[in-house]
Length: 375
Length: 237
Image (cartoon, rainbow over all chains, first blue to last red; front, side, top):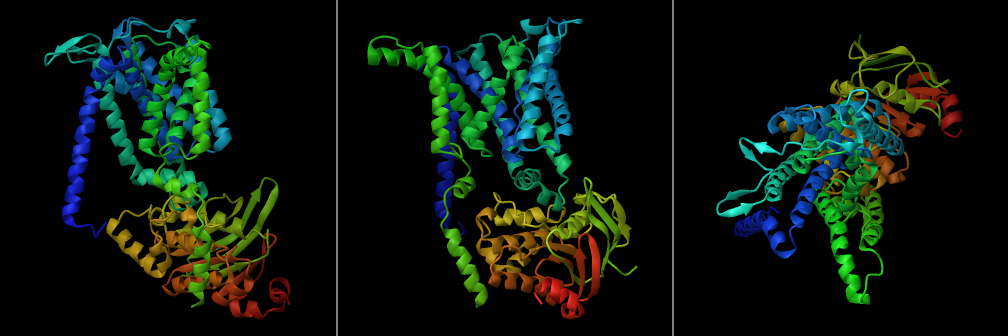
């Protein structure tokens, strides 16, 4: 890199700026493009994709960086969502403003993260996975049953009529006319989610290249050695849980405001597994990979739902298998194929790819070393 | 008190099994001390207890005049006590340079860390060539170098090495021991645990022999190397 001529570097920089501008315009125009090309329902799907990307990036801190397999991550999403719902709905008649409720939800999720982290500090791998899985279920079952003797969560019926996100006097829950364009509610949420997702990406990037980030990776690689390096493994692991949970809680609050309705059903084990899939499928520990994983895992089932019917008509002239049941089958198949063909994920970090590819050089290196030292 | 490290009657038990039954040893400032013994004698247990990774059942550990017993592992590193763990324990999916930087985790001086990084590359030129390579893809000897350089990055007063020769080619072992002598010559105190008694005693000034959790012999290294017991038990007659 040091020998690259200056003019070339400037050239590169200009290219990067053009690419950046193109990406920004594309992201800004995306909801209008999907409306025009694919149909009305797609912006909503994209909104969900963004929520899942936030979740996947949050889980990436715990699983990807610190190497702690968490199968109950959706619980933090639930905590954030219920915090928002209880403080901003007719359930208790509270209608606290969005900018208080959302951070509060994130903070509460953070506390739950520490609550989960503290007793599981000594656990690794399978054992940790089992405990976190149990934790996720406990939260869901609590939410399901907290309607008696005192009705807090309204049980399985869930909470409805949750306040939409309102920034100042500007409600994202209704259609607005801006700059001569009509912005329906889903479009407005898209822009909000996009901003938050970009913020989460930014924070993840900064964490990755920080002292804390490196400490997480050291713990992932070898906990005893990490402790011998002077890392306070207990606190750093708790921090990973807390940080990941905070992201999850914030996403949960946004979800509640966006949906207007939540029930324990949305926070089941399948959701947790789905988020783990996004992280693993995309490429553990690599932010671009995780984003890609999130996008694919939300869009793929939807694309299959909409595409499977017409495709069968085109091939056989009639619908042989109900697209709804076919879609999860194809989805599962796609996951298996990806894991077989690309075990490190679709977009792994360059380092991990190097590690997983068979490296014949190592043998030669060993011999070199021996010859070197004989000199 | 002149000793940098003073261990008195250290006992460690795993469940009901006593691994260390009362070990006492000293390391003076700048000294290279070898702790030798056969498999399962408790050598690694002793080092782990000294590094704070295991909690002793009884005994006292004084380091630089302070009682270490209730000091957490990560605080001991701050105090200049560094361990190169058995089996090297490099961070496989981090690059060589990232590994070395992890060694400086407890330090806050960026400039000093940078200087030390270059110093490590001078001490181990091999690592300079491989600085962007993943530590897990290195050969065993190179990984040992990474582990040692990483420990040195914390600017230790006392370096504890656990079986640095394990699983290495003879040429590599010679090179590693050469480096250990270099480090010692720079004034770092070293507590060296080895199964290879001959090599360890040749490098060390003093030595201890550990047998099933007890120190059975202690003398200066040359005497131990010449003694009949050590010859019979560890040097093959």
